[in-house]
Length: 73
Image 1 (cartoon, rainbow, N blue to C red):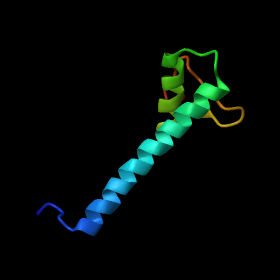
Image 2 (cartoon, rainbow, N blue to C red):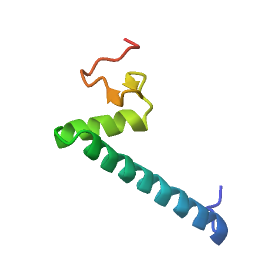
Image 3 (cartoon, helix red, strand yellow):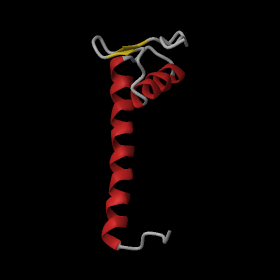
Image 4 (cartoon, rainbow, N blue to C red):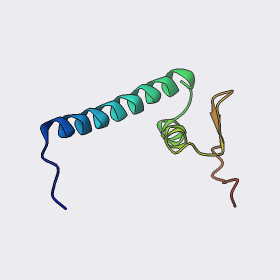
């Protein structure tokens, strides 16, 4: 399989990664604003739960089950 060299495709891939990074940073900023009392570690745990669409992650209110338990076990 040959590497992709088409400049249009490469530009789209770069844009995709830029948008992903921007979305992650926007959510991190939202979490910091919504939960100003929480530690950086808890904010990162909430961010990871959001990124993986964790089944323990509740959208309303915006909370994650941070106990470390998974509903699948």
